Length: 402
Image (tube, rainbow, N blue to C red):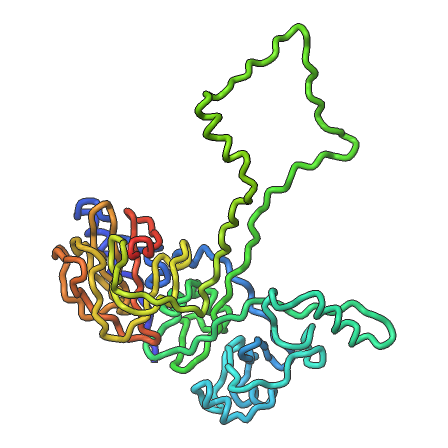
């Protein structure tokens, strides 16, 4: 069973109260990363869901799903894709004769025959990540398929593999959208949800993938053919030569060794995606101004505009500690029951703690670095979302924690 989603009335109340609290604007919309709001996600374009084949099957390297049609039941989908209806029903938490909405996603417990031109697909096989398709593979498969004449190969369908999320008890389309930084509308369109965004426990959802918008590149200036290039003005006897300004002798001497250096500048390291990776996080605090609020693995790193803090894996009930000394500025919860708190620190810093329970302090309390202030809330997975803000601009917490 899911609970109806309501607006963020609690946060709205804090906005009004914040105006009376010395200028601390507590409007958290767009400032809590994926933890409690979708305003940043609304700015992020998503891809369209791939088209299924004639059976309704969409295939990815790690799983397959079927898309229901108007008038479908679980049984009719099972018949169309060639799986036992009881097995398919158990896997999706429904009954064999339950009606399905047009566009609803049905997760497959095991793989069926891959989409191919014979099943109405453009190409054969699962949708592949773009990086996994190379020219050599295309050329080789083209030759194999052309016994009498070499025909151009049909490129495999490419695209990012979406996260497949299983709905847990108490989750709503809105909380799931916030978790993955997508809009509820996009989530509904990808999964055929009704106008109330209704979900059921055990239902599988495809999380919309972000559209890859290419960044504009500056091209080198190209001379139009036949136009020639600009000719420098020749020196004139009637005009004096420009005065040459020489640097002081000591600057020339200091710059000389640099001119003889023949080592190329080191190339900056390429960023490595953190998808699926975990980084150990301890309470040591290193040389930073703050200490880790919980001990655990960082399961999601800071990414401006996508995740405004870090998500730290921790068991339910793990003590949450103040990252630095300060004063509790706000404690509240969303209408979905997601509790969060803010602590104000010197130098215009604010630390934010989200997905907490059993808060042991109150607004206005002075807290010391390392003091227990709450516990990690139960969840699947359970984690603490932690942010550091300079004023109200989010910043990467890690430099403060090292």
